[in-house]
Length: 349
Image (cartoon, rainbow, N blue to C red; front, side, top):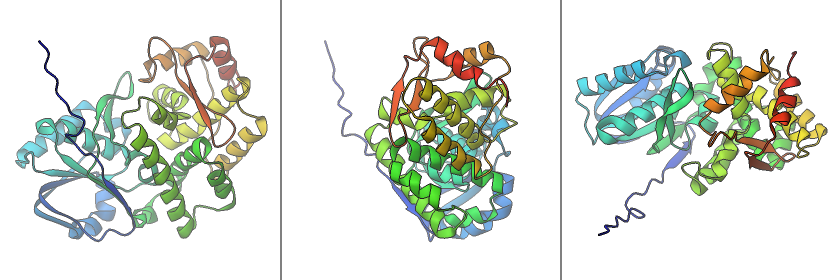
């Protein structure tokens, strides 16, 4: 006996991404804004009057990657139960990538799934983390190893929030913009070389183009079974860097910048990239003050950390390597000696 359940048309997960000043979010029934103390202090007064809801609550979580844990998730879920949210309720993630990931994961599992809305406040979360439905938390084995794909109902990207963003956080977001350009759009990369993103009009344009590129990829491959893995350019190295440094030394975008440079070295060794293109990428990253060299103190230990990455399957490490600027290859066939030759290039920084 066989019973077939056809789910192909059961759930339309399409949504809109709004890039401009927020005018109104809603109408909603019960809703909870999830944020951290820093964002709340700076911008909660700006956001709350724009939310139209029958009941509205605020849940504040500690700030930083250190708190992207089971304990924080449990605290958040407890507050949702305290406020008697139900399956018709909505969560609003109001912060950077950490808040977005945890809020999205809570929405995915609270009463088996409720709606959530992304209101990203950092450049990195505006151009990358808030779009695509990846949610999760960290554990001692690595980053985002526990989570779910759960698409938001909408994303509101308001450049207003960037006005209070520290320079280091801004640069971390630029790294993700550069990543998108290197992998998908050679013309966009050339535009980035000529146009500084500290300019208000330029940053709006860069956000728009980055989001358009990511939206196109997510539409093709929602759950990262194929082409969406290209968005992990630089991340295979970056996640090891973050793990080795306990998520304390570098912002995610800074680790990605170093990871991209390491991936470029590997791509050169594989005959996929010319040194001139790698130099252009490194120069653009450095022009925003981003770190581009991570000292690998123990090559064997760094190599073993690759196997904690969720993209590693059947003991094969998956790398996203640029083919020049504007194209890429996803491969799990990089010879071990090439990996170690790449890491040897970073013995000293």
